[in-house]
Length: 567
Image (cartoon, rainbow, N blue to C red):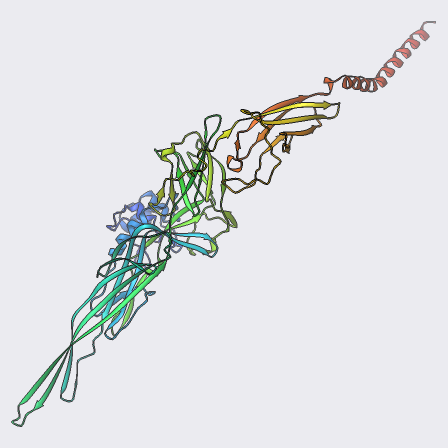
């Protein structure tokens, strides 16, 4: 996707050239807004300078050649949308201006009346899976609307000796109301560009805007009658007429209610385990007050305009025409990225231990045809939960950030669990018996503090956080074994040498109680037993007997030859 920069007439849906508006965003910020642009030949710097007499910023130049993506939902979409809303210009009393998709209403005299939701902010369009996208809105935000209409009066006419004249006295948008589902939550005076603040409960499924439009009309009838004396007598009748209409528009929403839980554990070396879980997509969480240590989930972001506003219709009683729109609302879009979860700092930051969520199909086919981003392909796992191991964490500063700009929360610690202790362990190994070909080794795993056996063979227990089965094991010589009810496991080693046995407890999320890992070394060699020495001697004899016989034969032959040469 290339950001189109025209050199002649600006085509429909082309946004203003970055850096030329008073939106409050700088040139680089404006340049990143416009995914969904059609592919065009890249405009190099010399051509751009020749056309406009100035150079672009580096970000502007890059955005001209590719869709820009973000690690966090940017606030540029909301800032631009507020500016774009101010660019909507309603018509006069005889003209109505509306997007082609507007739901228009006609009454007796009021025509092409509409109330259209321009944008909700903050909000994020989220691509969860093929055929499954959500429109998440912040619990607190603003609704931007556009309202317009025209008044169509009959033409003045004379029929017989009666002339009828029409005059528009007043017309206005009298009141605007905002509904959450069927409950009115706000109202305001009439305007063509309403901005209405809201606060929503998390179970709201629809926002609806309603506007009342009123018109007052004077109808004058003049009847002329010729009197007997030849004079004309005029009889005038005034009639006050009113017309009103209520227009509405609605949008389905998912209120983005961010409620995350956190679990902690402490490793013996002083590192901390942190697990955060939220039942909807979320951007990530920070671990320190200075924001230098962070964890990011699978979600990345881009910004793009609402294509329904690319054109506007200007309708009168006799004609309608499409014109380029200067009011282009922009939304943040969230998608699952091939980059997957990451941590910051990249090379010296937290280590991701586990992630979990739902397995979904890639929503790649649902993206606009001109959007090119690093979206996952095939199936992927949502990162509703992410656990890490880190050296740095300020528990009071841990904050979870959502996929809707400005929505964040401090995760709550389940009171029933509190801190999840990580118990130290003791793994030991002993050679039970051995011969020249095999050694039988007993591995014993116990809690370091109590000496109680640690049983790994019970796979029926379920992890308390990640909802996974227990996966702890002991690994030695490429074998993975699990201890029995006494905390012991027996393995057989077939090659002499030194072996390291490691207890891999898996994530502390998968075990309760949770354990730290441990390791030990066991050695064996056939020469450490009497039978092995005897067997080695026998083998030595079998190996060297032919050589000794040959040597003895050679010596005897040499002696015989020397005796034959000296009779």
